Length: 119
Image (cartoon, rainbow, N blue to C red):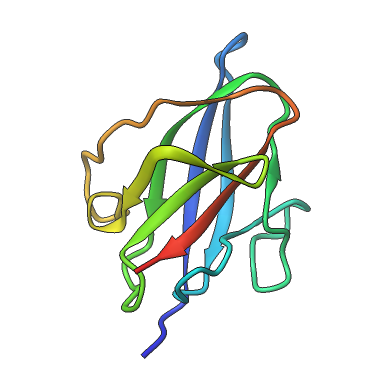
């Protein structure tokens, strides 16, 4: 049974230290693109498949609301290309875990951050 859920991708601006919390929608379907909020209204099925990075930043955290039953991982992308070795297992990135592993994935300003759901 498919169980859609939501997540937050947290990026830190490398110059100013400002944090960006990006709302994301996970459909819980293999090979489906994660959808990112681009309007401030929250992510959903009709949201864009990429988030344009506003400044040189590093992705430090992904927190997923417990729920997906089909997928188990997210494959990170930059400009629609998979980033080698950047496959995030959902079981260690749940919102219910107080100490998730800190990520360190760099993105240059203007890059399109994406993620694809994987079983």
